[in-house]
Image 1 (cartoon, rainbow, N blue to C red):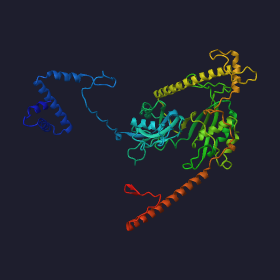
Image 2: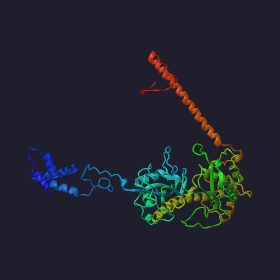
Image 3: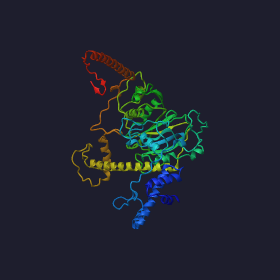
Image 4: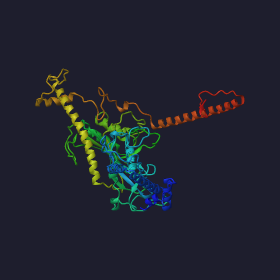
Length: 561
């Protein structure tokens, strides 16, 4: 407090003011930093400026400066000409301090992820895809909330690798995440040479885990509305989301559409157990060499209603076997699945349900000696497929009430948006069908007339015309199968026995081996050409006559010859 007047009193008019003030400050504050000296020097300059203005009689300017400082700072809420201007112009913001990871511990944690995959290009991050993926959004949220430092050193692992458009209700990822506890299950030791702190792994939740950071609430604040973290679970370091999973459950929803459910259930019985499913998937001959997989559960059940009219917790069991627009639920559970195995299995089951193929056809496709090459057929749509759950042993997930309420609100809002679209389509369908009944010919044969409507579309149809509606629906063939809409007339089904075949696994390996041989031959030819080039280069140095070989480009410095 006494430093500023003392510095002013010691000022010599022969010396520059800044140098004299800096000397005084250094003498008084020898143990302070340069930043403190500069800050005190600015205070001296401001004090000297005020005294000069008072001596000159410019006290009105001092009052204006004080009024400007007392005004509120400009805010982003005020925009336009009426926005208050800040008195401190050119003021630099202080940089955000980096997060000190040395002060925090990490632990191995499982996260249960639910998402609607309609807007995303699959779950896994892909370099050759421009659109966003679920994994991109998840990693961005983890780094934004400082729960992980980077993806490389977080021990990341995923359970389900869903395709573009596929949904998930219980996909699971595991990673080393920041914790506020010092002793818990799955704690990562700071010294990596030390062994993991031994703790008993129990299926129940410990009391210390309830005091942990609320990971779902933290992540859901920065994630999109169609991606939600439902819960988390502590896990030992030795467990991973991919290799520790003992069952993955998929569900697929199809229209009832007068399908032969009994034939489909008979076909499902052939798929249970350990089989070679190379004819039920897209063969990845580079990364996969074994195609045996074990399927535990394959069943078909009828859903309660075609479209829910209100929020329901439990489905009511009603007989809707006559409703063509009702849904059926196909459940497939197994330890692991091949590439597109679930969707191709559903495509074959739909052929059986539409009486286009026999149930024994799926049994024949499991015989690799009889069918070494897969028949060509399209896989089912990705929209009705859901990764329903991933099951683990000795793992209990922790669910928070607030998180579940928020996730329920988000998914219910998405359901209402789709329900409005479905209602509009139903209005369009019913109105067009009423016009179609009016156009029905008066003849008893039940044929449809091509004449214009006899009655106006605004007039009501008599009650007895509902019988005519059922006749029209039997005559008119609604085009399109399940989620695929065909153009023009529906294509005639070709039996799988008469269709073309893909290349077998051995043929693809031989083709891959042939490509390697061709690559090696081309490399050998290229090396011979370079040898010839080196010989000609030596001749050029000696005789100064050089003729380069054809189709060979060699870097000579930064120029090409």
